[in-house]
Length: 426
Image (cartoon, rainbow, N blue to C red):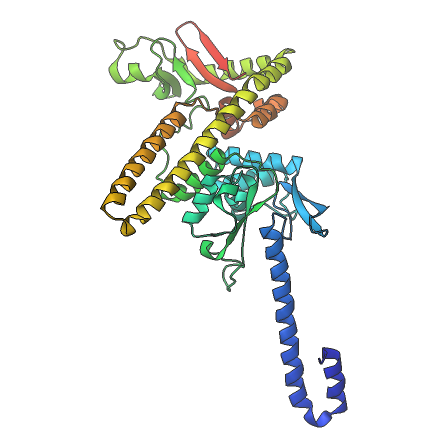
């Protein structure tokens, strides 16, 4: 078989056929390029379909480790990067719990000089990629169902989506002049990959829900910019929320107070709790936070809090995830039964209908069981971060920072005429 170098020598020796030989050389070169691309692509998909990291940069939050596979060849797998994985958790927490937009998340990370994967600046696309990739969460039946509905090509059967691995979404990119890369889900593949998850299924799906609805939502209401304590303050007499209300003195100076919603809406006969000056309450709360979280006993309290809640939280989330996966499998059973109706006779039709009813009852029971679970809504890493930097954060004059701080540390503030009781999460 001719080689490229031999053809080039022939071209030099036969100048009269130069143009024809150039065409032959170009054809062989093109064939060789296509063969190389095909070989590289096949290797990429082989690695991806067999649970290895296919190639390129590791996703943010992971690092690459080289191993010798069962085939005796060198392969790459992903390991959690402790430092970067904390940023991934933080991004999810900011997005789903603190309701911070992707743009503001990127700005905050840039302000703190936290580099991206390639040591660049954070933007909406970088944040969005972290919030979208299934590689960060356990590959469960819910993940299988989600990407099946999107039309993705899934290379593993549903029984292997048991939460012991994560899943990597990959595929060829389409390029045009305006957009760097466009990928349609029906042209992409989802394969199980041997790496540990960073984000729970619950938080991952919360992020997808927000991403899918944020652009359609109207501006949020009841979000006060007057006090960073709004939403935390409760009336000690009737239990209702305290909300801000403005008023002016005889000199025209504006003041803001917190008033019980019962009293504001129905008068003193409904609740006679006194109003409290916003600035006064804020000073009291910040002073108490400083004293409480700088005490010698706080570390012991934090460790006990985490120890008491961690095992309980894991148990509840594991139970919820199992129930959700069971529901997905029940839905698939119902779909198969419905699809078989067209080929059924009168006898089998009765059986199918009865079976669907039984599965539906089982499904509803599992949904009720999920709703009865007292699921956790805390983030220990975020809480520890606030406690370690408590003095710095308390000195911040940034309204949003103080609001996030108080929300992270305080369960509620109960106010009566004579007492202010601050209930901390620890």
